[in-house]
Image (cartoon, rainbow, N blue to C red):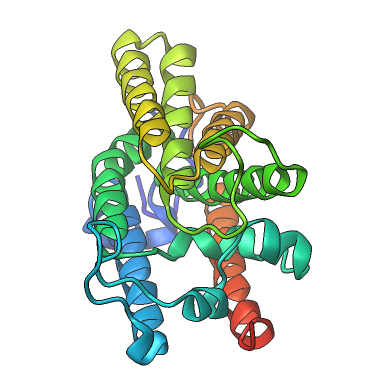
Length: 265
């Protein structure tokens, strides 16, 4: 078949040649570059927050504070949480905060999970839908955390967050999507592995300080719900790619809006 054929005559997949760009895109791997995109963008944002912090960077401290950007730098680039979202009206930070990290250990662990879960999610759900799920899960996670912080719960480790950043809400979204795929497809292996990882990380979050557990829970629910909407047993379509690009553009615009609006806070 030709690279510009509208569908595969064998399996029925729409635009199997990706309008002629298929061979080039597949050189990026089975995830079509999802992992390099997330890791590269997150690393770039981490470096930018360190540079913007200047002398306020925490070079050394406790184990969880090595190379920490300043609070002002994280706010400048779109830190989320109850205070930015509801106190300052910066609702768009639920999109930008996924790409920011609080210290070196934070970004290293999160990117390790992206590297482990990203290819698996892209291979069974599709790379474009994986990007959408990653973005939606981050937004739902930070929104949940911000709402709980606004309400205020007198429960240790379950209070939401006044300020929060990190890719972990999106990572839990990937786990939620994999759990739904395993259940929908009947793959007990995928369902069991995703469930095991989710339980381990939830328990780890309850035991560790400074972990935004409501962002994790909200991200998991958001990823599961997004997978339900997409029905991962169907083939990816061209409009899924458009949605993925829209999510990336919206995230970039959220960061730009933060730089323009939150610089003085």
